[in-house]
Length: 290
Length: 269
Image (cartoon, rainbow over all chains, first blue to last red; front, side, top):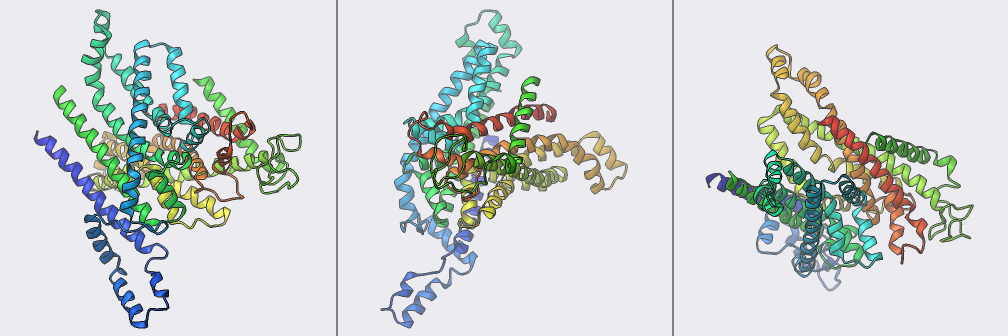
């Protein structure tokens, strides 16, 4: 229990470090971005010299990167992530509007990818037919050799939902690990003996295989979240889905650094959280097994 | 598997050879426009037809393949050297150095690859000359793609540091620097080769993704990414199948690298 607490504390520390380092990086990039410190209001002919000077003075505290960092972090702590340069809207509003679609897309995509992975990997481990193994390896290998953006383009061409494109981008990565893990687990002596003695396949799977492979599969599941998040950019951008991936792409094309860096930090936090959760759950499963 | 490795080698040699001989094989330069044959279908003059501005697609495929196949290994070399320096040194030094290096590596690795790439790409000016855009794209891939390799190298160097022969050499009074270059680095070579080969297909695919998203190599310079961007306007697969040639070529090359990679992984293991 104590070790588990230490593990959770370690992950929490990593998340905190990501926020602090990411925040510093974000503040530095925003501070150095072209157009920083330029205020269109200064061009207003109705303003006199004193008013223009007042606008200058108001921004003076932002000129120092570290001062800017602290003000950025305190604003971020209150939910103010700044404004998008290209879209002229608060970053928070943009993220709030687009997050549901991306989350739905990722959830369905990951669900489909794991269904496909486990079905094919389990059948490969059960059947142990070299032909079947070769076919599934070739299929997953072909998808592995296709750029994610091409899969997104093909999904548009064939009117396939974006979530399926995400599933097909993630699946070859997860299948490779899952298949190897399951084949290795099924070749363990005690499982071979159990099979020889006529123990049912379901019993072997749930009693002997699942407990062995779960921690490692959970680790792969954590990594698959990062893969799916990365795949969301081409899929949303090319399928015309107004999610966070498309927002990141638009921000990159417009060099909208405040928006892009905030999105990147947010996505990093989500993937770190997923990896930490997978690690902690895997640890608990291993502990219970022991 | 040995047969497939030979096939992969032959295919790679053919593709690389053809791309290097583009100056002689291609009917014209990659930027030459045939204004009287815009978006033309394949013919005797234009084997793969022309694109929407009348450039010969076959020539662009050859030149694009040359760019992708020369610069992806260059980027892979850069990332492998960075990984060797950061991961190898951290693993060899051990203790706080290794922990610090691995914490930074983990942080980098938690960033989704494409998010990291487009953020870094957005930091650079987008309206640059085509040549600069090629260099920026592959330099970014090389500079950002070292993390996974560094992790592997740190672990390998760490286990070498505690191995008997290194301990014995240290006890015999061999200076630390000499020990690193003479005993540690040569033993890291198989892992370095494997990481180099792993990086090449990853970088080829990453460049293709960036190109399709409009963040890669700038026009009129061709690359697989910019050539694949043509698929965006397709209505059906059967309509203009010749537009799929760059994709088929990319899949063949990446698959060949993956087949050769299995050999490298065996050596590294």
